[in-house]
Image (cartoon, rainbow, N blue to C red):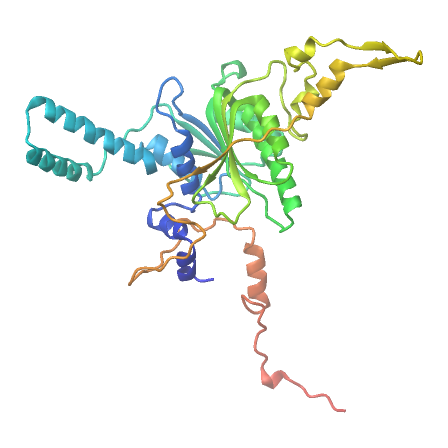
Length: 395
């Protein structure tokens, strides 16, 4: 598929190159921020310390760098800042003098023109962003990069050392936000893909719990399937609010979505470890509701035939609580007036397709392409045989 056909098929693919993003997935994080205010400016919940898991090729890290380090605004946040400045300026001018309706409309036009100028950047102090991925990634401004496997136990120590260099473990500063846009190479078998993705999410959650501060946020990609509500129920034990979000830049034909967990609440006496699922209720038997605790351990009932029947109300209620399923609320992110990722758009006259902002540094298909070239072509075509070297064999 050529560049022109991709530009027609996906508007976000074209916009990403026009707006200097490394990948179209940058719009997903921007739209999630519009809905959930991930990069909050308000104190004391201001977002300044972030960990980006499965970061390559770096589009989400690029958004973090431009928003937190450079102080830029995108999407709805930029529009709200512009409108708030406009309203403030109009109120100030109306308080000073009494304008007629005609003069006021002229002032509004002048203010709108002035707001089109380049806004002042507002970088945040003490920002620290760590990006982790198994693949190498081109450098970004202010981003600390680690080439590591998030499913390996040694990654936890390397991540903590990158976040808090030259500090003791008791003095570690926790992070405000952990994001993960990682996904496995899909096979087309939905059940298998959903299982592998859930294990990747568990690994990302395990790393997030080790560095996330109380009240922090966690965002990760998830594949929606038949039993995915069990994962939501487990996340609900660690976070007060859990939502499933579908950005408009994510294709509706895809089963991907993003789980947005807010207000992290640590569980006393429990620490997860890589290599096993986060099965919180089984690892902490003390996590029972007060109503379950008040139930009797066992009851005895004598039937009419004289047989003593034993029942265990607390155990039955506890088992019911352990297997309780919970469905997270679903939210669609992004303005309905924006582009549709599944639609095909006509390109303007004279459109020139742009090259990607950042070509792949070490793509996994690089070896396969080199082998095909050596064998005679990109598409498996064989080299032309010299007719002089052909020797006919006699019958």
